Image 1: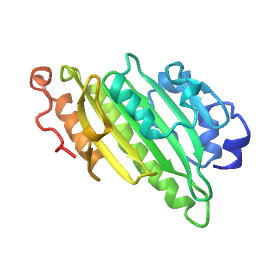
Image 2: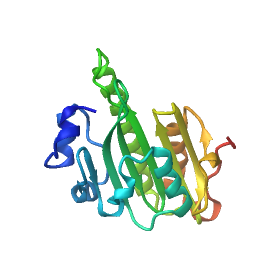
Image 3: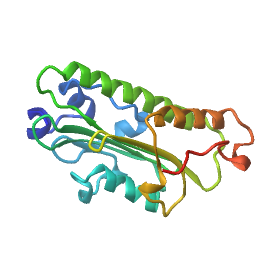
Length: 207
């Protein structure tokens, strides 16, 4: 974690990320404007403000949403340090339709800062496309949510269509093409008038 994120409160999330040399997360505009400082290097909307979330591993945050769901949309963005070359930006978006959980390496050590920034930009581009497709889908499969967990800490990308509640992380598929598969699946919904009755045409394989 850099000194800016560790030692000070930035005026807003955009200023903090700019100071860290990172792009803005592709969150809906009304959520970005509602996110408030919740500790050094942390911004969250009201729904995700709880102190119990501070420095919580991504797997636990995702597991809570998978198990209990979320009645409203909310987001959280924070910097988490785990030592030299092990600093992460953690971005969480939760809604009744989908949950996106990211933990990306952002260490500025050695000469890899530009490469790291490009990787974060690429992930944010995929996230933006997925959230936009979710918004365009006029209908949604009854009783289903879409989940994606992209965690640099364990090096795994997981995704899947899951039930509204009572789901485990183990129910998600491990697939390096998870972003593309999830986006393709939601794009199908966005153009399908029978999506509510039929649901996704295909589901990810069991892990």
